[in-house]
Every structure is written in C-alpha cells, then in structure tokens.
Amino acid sequence: MTILLTGAAGFIGLHVAQRLLDRGERVIGLDSLNSYYDPALKDARLELLRGRNGFSFHHLDFSDRDAMAALDKAHPEIDRIVHLGAQAGVRYSIQDPYAYVQANILGHLVMMEFARGRMESGSFRHFVYASSSSVYGANTHIPFSVEDKTDRPMSFYGATKKSNELMSYSYASLFGIPSTGLRFFTVYGPWGRPDMSPWLFTERILRGEPIQVFNHGQMRRDFTYIDDIADGVIRALDHPAVGSDGAAPNALYNLGNNRPVALLDYIRVIEAACGVPAKLDMKPMQPGDVLETYSDIDSSIRDLGYRPSTPIEVGIPRFVDWFKTYHGL
Image 1 (cartoon, rainbow, N blue to C red):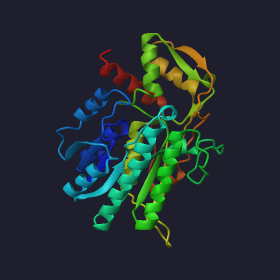
Image 2 (image 1 turned 180 degrees about the vertical axis):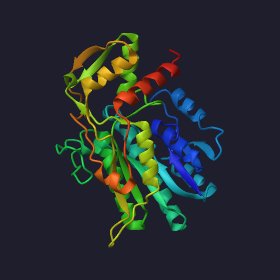
Image 3 (image 1 turned 90 degrees about the horizontal axis):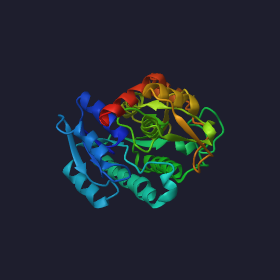
Image 4 (image 1 turned 45 degrees about the vertical axis):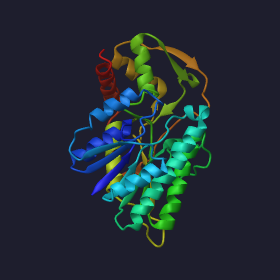
C-alpha cells in the first residue's frame, strides 16, 4: 500500500521520505512550497527524491479541501499518513498568527478528515503527525514527560500544536482512527531550516558577523539529530496506537535526545566545527522562548524501541560540513 507524506520538501519530511523509500515503501509527497524560507532549498531537497522508485509528488496545500478530496479519489491505495507539514517557527507565529491557523489548525482538520474517509473505506492503518516540544510551554517539571500538563503554551505556535493533539484525540475517539503525535525537540542536521540556530549561527560565524545569543546564553536545549528523529518517526509509524478497555487508539511520544545542552556549550561546538571564533551579541529573552527543553523518552524507548545516539559533537560537524558544501564554501 501507500503512505501519504505531507511536508515532503521540508527538513524532516525529506529524511523520513528517504528512509521510507529505502525500505521499499510507496510514498506520495505533498508540499505547498511556500516562501516562509527560500523555496530553492525545498526544491533542492525534492531533487533528492524525484525519480526515486516509489515516489510521486503533488504541489498542493493540504489545507485545500477540494484539492485533498481530488487526491483521495485519485489514490484509494493510501493506507497510512505521516503528517509533517505545518507552518513552523515560534517567533514568526507572533507576526502572522493567521498563517498558523490556516496550516496548523485547518490543515490538520483536513488531514484528519482525509484519514476519516480512508478509515470508513476500511483501508486505513495509522495517522502519525508532528507535534512539538513547544506544547510544554511554561511547564517547570524537568524532564518534560508526555504525562505532564500542557495547558500553558508560551507561543501561539505551541498552542496550535497542542490543538492538533486535542483534535487528533477526538477523531481517534469518535471514529477509531489510530493516531500518534510526536513531540519533536529542537531538530538539527543536514538540509535543516535557515530560520533555526544551527544555520543562523554557522552562517554568521563563517562571515565573521556577530550572532544573537538570547537570555545572555542562560538557556538549554535538547538538540536532536535528524537521523534519530527520522528513525523515531518510522518506528512510530510501524507501531499503530491501540485503544484498550474502551480507550481511544491515540498515543503521544517525545522524540528528543534526552541530553539538554547549555546554549554557550552548543555555540562552542559550532565554533570548533567552523574553525572560527564566534562574536557574541548578548540579548534578553525573546517572547515565546523557554529557558530549557529536556525530553523524557522512557515511553518512546519502551513502546517504539527509540534510542537516539547522536551527540552534538558528532551531529554539528556533519551539519557544518553539509552547509559548506551546499553553499560552495
């Protein structure tokens, strides 16, 4: 059968698609190729997938109900969904919240309705979707556990991701759709996004420009390498949520590295990989940011066999090498 993958031209989408194709799956990729960041990077990612056996691509917006209805009719063989497409970015959600409602709320609903239609045809197996560590917001319990309360998001982006979790639970309960949400923790690596710190810091350090260090460096992040994330997504896909004793077939997991790193230590690793000292521009805390992210992955280890294995001392040099190659440096 066939997997529908949204956000196929995205950072995580590329790596998940490659893993699925490597094991012989058929993948239908969707992406709107919007201009939140340079579409040329998205096109370059797609070039790695185009022509591969089992892959096809549709340039469309998954929040477009008519387009998705047409896709449903054209591809009745779809039996699983990996919904990674979203409007990303914590800080941008302050500038344009409507984009997040369109993609992350309406878009998620359209995807669940797609799954509902597949479920009613009797041919659907699993709906896996991207959530985020941003749902933990002002939570002070460390490490963050999927059992923790997540009713105080610090960003509108986090609020939309929490909404996705609630929506998915309701559809699992109402229609029996096996649904699994994955809370990603600060994903980085080759082909990463230009709006995230590995790219921003590497670019500025190599140019000899200062980098902005928020909260004067007094922050920690659970940096998670892309290969570990892609492995976790595939493992989740292969373990459909199962309801027991009348419970909805719904699950949530953290996918993190389980090793929070101080921001200044992280910068030192990038400096070493670049071979150039960083110029630090210390800034106050930004709206929507949190002091620390730290994933409790016990349930992911127990249920999925997820075991991240890449420290930043290995992952960051890989990213910097890719960055230099991509930019011809």
